[in-house]
Length: 196
Image (cartoon, rainbow, N blue to C red; front, side, top):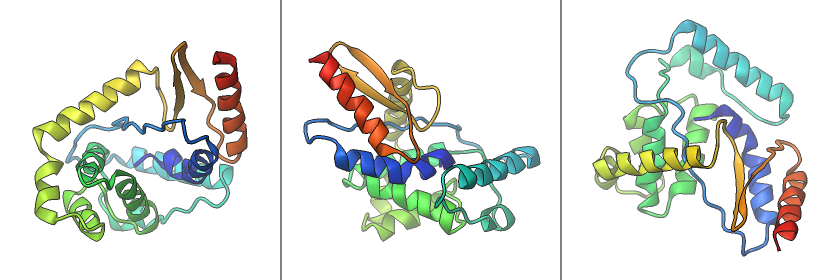
């Protein structure tokens, strides 16, 4: 549910496709906003809409459906979506769930803070509803989200999206380039060459 991560998706996909096979990519969920049933304050709604517009100017081709702000009751609550990714991972569908959540939120104006939305998305991926609903709020799922948030902090991640190259001799932040995946690949290759 990070709008900058949505904008980064094409560049990230291109980067991943261009990296050597022996580089293992490990996505981590950062959490962003804890569970809440409270409607998002108007000032925050306006700030996020302004962010969407800024992203559209900065990263051409990024689409948003602003009907979300007119037709839904937004909440600042991203942990349900994070847990949905973890629950989907039990069925090897984590990446597909991330994309389904992003499409639902940014293009279809659906609310991925709502468990009913997440359960419906899981079903479209072929994940059994009952199993997914059970996993969504299972204590192990909560624990895994806490582990991933802690792992992000241990890597020094303070913003999303972020990339960190983890090598034997250290961890190296990779500057995120929304329109230039080749620049990210060149940085990674330089660090790999330096560490050899």
